[in-house]
Image (cartoon, rainbow, N blue to C red):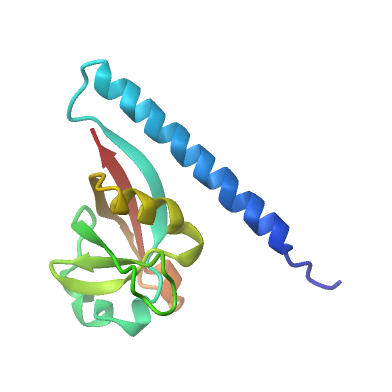
Length: 140
C-alpha cells in the first residue's frame, strides 16, 4: 500500500491550528497573570532536540541531567530556516527546536516574551531524535 503524504494545504492548516492553539495558551496566561497569580509557568510545548548528532551533545552527554535548564536562542539569519531556534545547554549548542514546531516559539522570542526550557527526558537511543526531549514554558 503506498504511503500517503500530507498536502501543502494540510501542512498549512496544521501550522495555522498550532498557531491558534498557542494564541489560546497565551490568552490563558494573560488571564492568569491579571488574576494575581505571578510566578506561574504554563507548558507551551514538548519537543525533541533536532540535529543533536551534528552539534556538541554527544561530547556533553554524560554531563546532561533531566531538569537542566536550556537556553532558546533565535537565529533569524539562519540560511536553512528563518524561524530557527537554537537549543543550548550552558552555552553549548545541542541542536534546534524542530522546524515543524518552531514557528510559535520564534514569534514569542521575537516579541521578547520570557520562555524557559528544561530537559525532561534523556534516552540513549540510536535515533538522535529520541535522545533529548525538552519542554518549553511561558513564565508569568
